[in-house]
Length: 158
Image (cartoon, rainbow, N blue to C red):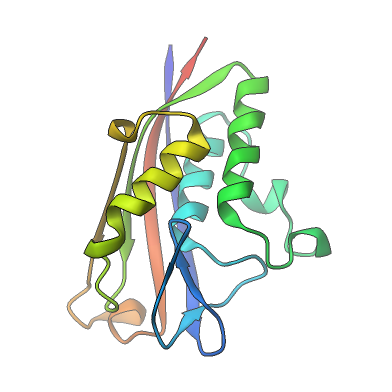
């Protein structure tokens, strides 16, 4: 038996914060604003996994009102999500994720992002796909006010 999930996340770009996407720190003049490290891609992945298992979303598991998650490493949070799935009898089948950002260029970092997500999910890198696109300077991502990400996944029931 398998289940499908979808996740979406968005964060505002701001100065004075590192830009962390897919667990990779990318040199850029702006970072993403949020309670944790604001890794928009990994947040979308976590929401997809939790949604596939009908376990709510990351806000329920890691509330932004809890100081324990201030500045939290989202890859570590993803590992916790995978552990929750395992406790419920699920394993990650595959993940396909899309980052929407006008800048910076993401292509040089895609392999590292895939490796980080695969490691956290206990799957082979071939089960993880990450891609990036712009919105041709349209909308809040196109005007560099923020970044967003979508993710879909399949989880398997043991």
